[in-house]
Image (cartoon, rainbow, N blue to C red):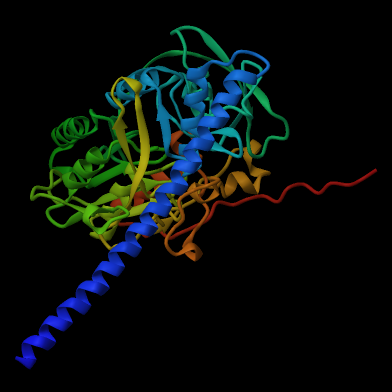
Length: 445
């Protein structure tokens, strides 16, 4: 009887504690919701005041667009709102064909920064380089624009031109570049033979829906062309700004027999995902050298990190950009979509490269042209860690700046490509920095 009494008393006490805890949690949630609703009411009040009292009648659709963009831009440099037109443009871009200039861009200190020009596009032919800063578009100052507004202004009818004002590291004064818009058809994979016609070279310039199929075609053609004398593969990911996650996983899987490719971790543990490779190395275990530099970002870093961690490839070049976050496209019906950062990704060894990048096994820096030799900023160009509001690496002390994204057009000047060829021939290749001449001394008169 006494035992039952104490059992009942314990249940009553436990129930009272749980009830008290539940009420406290509900009160906290209620207070939080109350604060949120108060802030939303504030937004509504400001919107109504602008609509009724601004000196001119404002475009209400643009006001809402700007408000949503501002909210998302405050999170990190890669979250943004896409109105229906921009959403359609983005879908065309991931399919590998769109209209524009052919540059991957981001925002830095209010200016548009070129992450990388896309191969064989108007921007690349006009001589734009990774880390160029655009200050004006057709004479209109970019400072004050959102990234989406600047991108919209750069797009336009095919065969029309736009004047870009470029601020380039190492060049004293900004200069103008005329670029003629065109339909951008991205052939994301190209191939060639190098060395003594016995090394397979594969250039992957972006990760679109066509990348994996293009890679498989290139491997097949190269293996048929070179035959039994094939020494190995050079996979060139330099100035590859990234793209689709599933394509990065497929490309990595092409060279792996087993093991993890990448994992993603969101805010909640239940949102974590791990992606593994399937059996079947299309290169039959041939040696691989992966080339990266400061313009290699996102999906290209996933590939480099997976092959490096599994010791499947030697990574050569300079530190990559350091974009280690995953963006999810969330459609909003007829109202467009939002691009929202939803997770960090991790290499198979469990490393986050966010704001840190992939460090090559062998560091080879390119010789810079004369106009860039004066600038330490050009030599050690900044990556994700330099972007205002970037998602922090979990160990902030690990954050590192990017590296040069310069690749010479002439193969004979391409030190990284030469080193990769030497490596596949079994020659000793050591890390080395490019020779940099000191800037000439100046005197005051």
